[in-house]
Length: 388
Image 1 (spheres, rainbow, N blue to C red):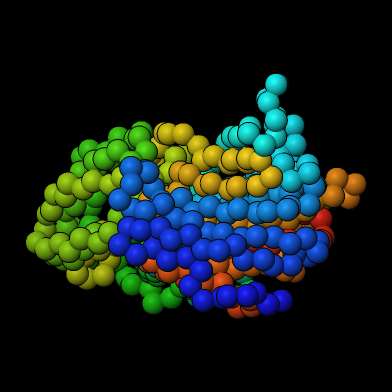
Image 2 (image 1 turned 120 degrees about the vertical axis):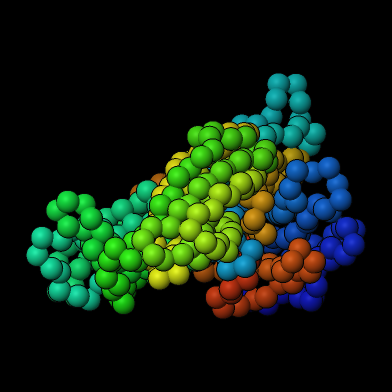
């Protein structure tokens, strides 16, 4: 598949939006599709720049739209959304108000962006000691480690995605005392992945793990409103404090250097999307021992919107996370006469990538990209209506 005029189709320079000309591509349905990417200038009153797509001359049928909000630095999917879309003669079906015409009647339908989740298979290639229990954890997400052919094995399910998260493996005795510990930084993707842990550290009186106390931190917050978190972190034994890491649950994190035997931190954060967010706090001592605690915050606000007008089908994704630089969308037909099957990979697509919200270009290959991308694909095979 080839596309004309591939270079720099959209430019966003000094807050000025310069929309590109429509780019015509052939889809798997042999239907011409005009693709245009637009980003709101940052100096407008819009709460967040929302990418949009326009598809012209879309064939009538049922489509499933998948949306992903991507992390700016790593391209990890942080948020996901699925929406069914029906097009009749180039217009959303069953959306015309009484007494109106398809040419002048807009329609709005809510699309909720949910937090993307992944699964970790934690493996520790070691023989377990008797009278010790082994647990793998990331914040409130835990898994009992059981003996297997490859060593200790545990599966952490439904873990929020994000980069540089601290995966702990702890061994405790029958009294609950921490005896051994190891930690590894992991990037959690919205799929199952394996992680191998090693380098056990013995826990003694002189290198006991720090103690974390949450002094202030509510269980609810409003979207884009300041959320305040106060922490007190105390060293245990002879080891001094080194640093604390806060993963806010929406894919963002921060690290604060510490010193001495006690520190009080007053932090603020603003959530860009609604839903339950799990804050994970990891304190590290200079001896390398680690303490971790977590709490869940419910963020409240409105949903994203999907709009369709006239002979255009226009996607406008609102409620985009503050730390996401892109949405990822695929339009895939789903014939109603065919039973649902696992979602296939799109066979043809137009990919639009941009970095730092300044330039955009189209490419005609399917090479994996580390940078955030926006895809539009049409697949001739059926997919389930719920997607995933």
